[in-house]
Length: 221
Image (tube, rainbow, N blue to C red; front, side, top):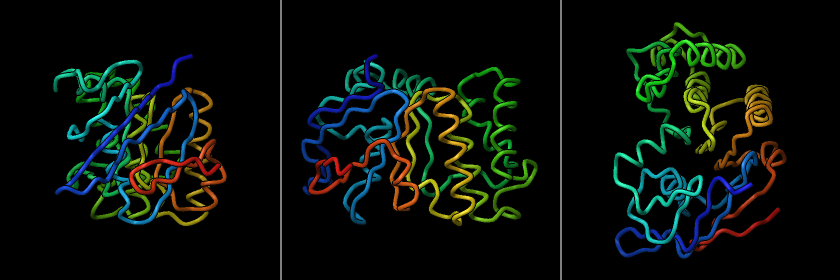
């Protein structure tokens, strides 16, 4: 089976400083790859490139065999809708919507069957113990908002989930619950996950650990 993502010679610079410098990466379907590295080394930049939000890179990036560099904006939007899920470090929840409505936004924008999407969203939120009818800013804790952001990344059934420190605001017990859920869903649905991780307990769950340093990735386990 072909990998879900292949990156070759990826370079990305800001103001003349190379953040990613000839980086290579292969992600197999169904695997969990953890990315580690010092603060400011470019881990979030890497996720932005892999997720096609950042197009200012050079090199080759293939997602499901499709050449990202050859796509126009409409084609890229289709890849994000059909294949990718995102968990952003800053959540980006809309404060006037309920937790459930926030989770369903990717399904609304991608024209998915809303009955199926609502069922999936309610199942994940229930398993993560999030109050579905609560608004994120006025009622939910930071940890609950983080869990809403994770559920939103999963609602379209992605082939590849990209997550920037998805458990950073969670205590040990809720972190365990979250990754038990993610591990179970990965086994059931076969999606891959690339996540920036700091928690040592979560790193123990990863199939591979890659360290980003000097613009390149090195496999450390």
